[in-house]
Structures are given as structure tokens and as C-alpha cells.
Image (cartoon, rainbow, N blue to C red; front, side):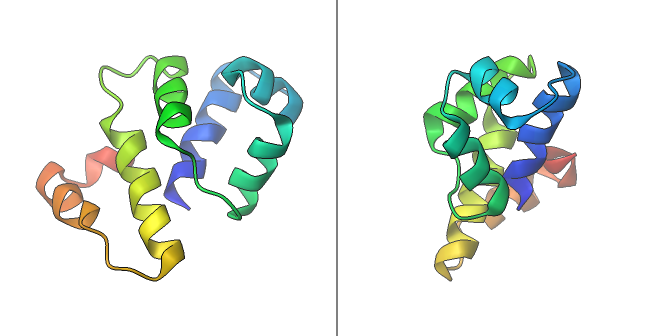
Length: 94
């Protein structure tokens, strides 16, 4: 899952030792973190925005695109996000 990579970046950036600390940093539940990491759930837009803020990104588009792509993949649908990923280039997911 591409979007989980951004959660892990937040955890690494702030040296958060566990899911509970990451959840507290993002002001979401620990169970949400577990569901995101396991791929059972994909981050919603609010969580994507919180992650982008925590990472001090200039814009949230990379995180939103990753979550949108993951959401489409999970549902078995072709994602329109692929068009924008190609247009933006691979740096979006770096």
C-alpha cells in the first residue's frame, strides 16, 4: 500500500515508537493506525491532510493520490488517479 509509506514516514520523522504514539501525533485512534497498516482500511482525506501537515509537505497531493490509488486497487477498480500519477511523475510517491 502506497499510502502506508507516508504513515511510516511520520513515525520515523518524529521517532514515534509505536502505533499509539503515531495515533496521538495524528489525533486519530490507534485502531485506525492498525487498520491502515494492515491494509484493511485506507486513509480518508482528513487523515491524508493530517499526514501531509505532519510531514510538512508543500501540498497534500502525494498523500491523497497514494490513498486514492490504494482505495481503487482494494476495490478492484481501475483508478483515475493513475492518470495524474503519470502526469505528475513518479516523484509523487517518493
